[in-house]
Amino acid sequence: MALPRPVVLGNWKMNGLRADGLALAGALAERAANLSGTLGIFPPATLVGEVARRVAGSPVIVGGQDCHEKPSGAFTGSVSAAMLADIGAGAAIVGHSERRHGLCEDDALVKAKAEAALAAGLLTVLCIGETEEEYLAGRQIEILERQLAGSLPGSGNADRLVVAYEPVWAIGTGRTPTIGEIGRTHAELARMVAAKVAGDPVALLYGGSVKPDNAADIMGIDHVDGVLVGGASLDAGGFWNIYTAGGGV
Ligand code: PGA
Image 1 (tube, protein in one colour):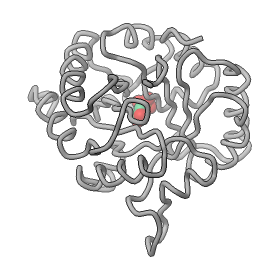
Image 2 (cartoon, helix red, strand yellow; image 1 turned 120 degrees about the vertical axis):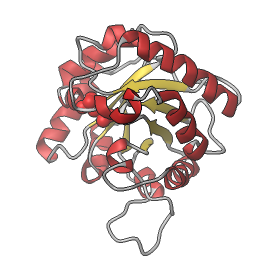
Image 3 (cartoon, rainbow, N blue to C red; image 1 turned 180 degrees about the vertical axis):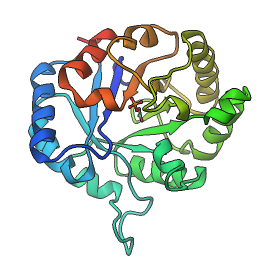
């Protein structure tokens, strides 16, 4: 069964000590006792277990921002998908641009991570997106096609896999593509993903400078099933308003 829409996910990045993180998660869980859509939060790895316990009993999904491609072993500093699942995570992000570009993760590694997350039973959020240089050269579709070919896991289906289109130049900058541009890109993305993943349509998210005041316009676009939110997910009220702007109750 496909994930209920809208799919609104909040990536806290490297933000949140225990007190703030638990307060944020608690405030969200109070609003989200019943959900028509899908709401997820991705705290730093240190808080995944505690946040999962804090929201237990609500439908809010808690996930890791990354996972290692192997289940266990001599990989200092890394966290496996099975470890995330073991502490209550239901999801993992893989291929975020801050890891692709900041930590040199390539498509093959991202694919291995996505497959590890799926194997651990996690909802897997695969991020793709072009750089500003590629955007200015009009190469979005070519780049997305290449990233999908290289990093989309072989075994995903629509209730376990989400694809997030996040233009690198729109992340944390306050800039977004136009509504028309997002619409054209997502129409192509829908076609490309459908050609690779059989069955129900995979949820396609837009990410990059999504705020309460642009969320309704963005989620009103065809083939945009939800959003992946960074900075604006650190405020419970604002993040909830983004969810409701997408039609979620
Ligand atoms: P932003 O981040 O909403 O702060 O632009 C989005 C993301 O990195 O997922």
